[in-house]
Image (tube, rainbow, N blue to C red; front, side):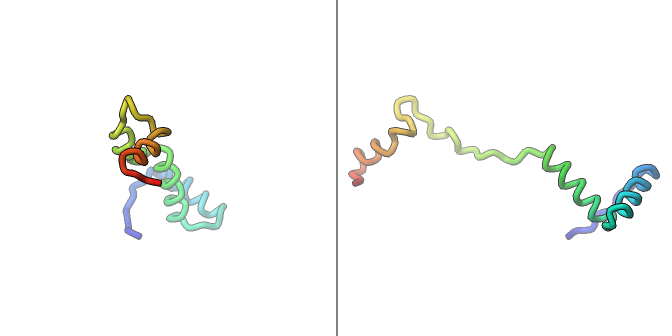
Amino acid sequence: MNKTTLYLSPETQRGLRDLARRTGRPQADVIREALDLYLRQHVERPRPRSIGAGEDSELSASKSEDWLRARWGGA
């Protein structure tokens, strides 16, 4: 893990301290959990660029196996 310093308002610090005390967890655990949840909700995962790159108006995916067998002599 990497160390990070945060500057919190007195109200936020008090809330964090109280929540950590009530749950019996270290403040660092509470902060990590909150950040993980926030990032899961707000950061988009990269999407594959290759989907649709080989799109063909004449050959559908459902017929591609037959096309390959016909062209390459598969069983």
